[in-house]
View 1: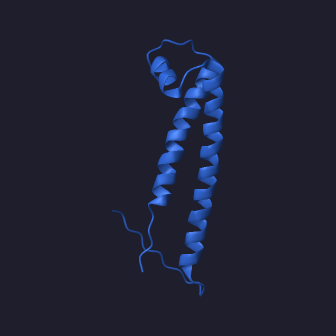
View 2 (view 1 turned 30 degrees about the vertical axis):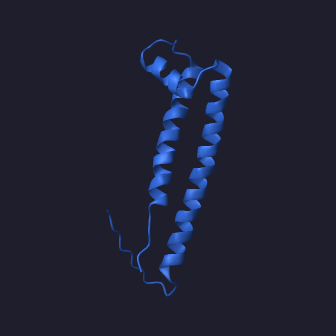
Length: 96
């Protein structure tokens, strides 16, 4: 568990400001996740295979190195990073 202490010279309470910023960032991450999932579904439909199967074939060099496949693998990896980051934001708890 990591802990962070914030201080400010402002008279305004800091906690609501930080909570709002974190919630806003989480909303943006969730929107990015939805866009990326939609893009991935498009690749899956166009090529008739799941991303899991695609990644396995791609990493085993069973597929040609096309721009579309490079974009697909990029979207797949991006989705993983976005989900990790969103999970980290969801795990933030405020002490009293």
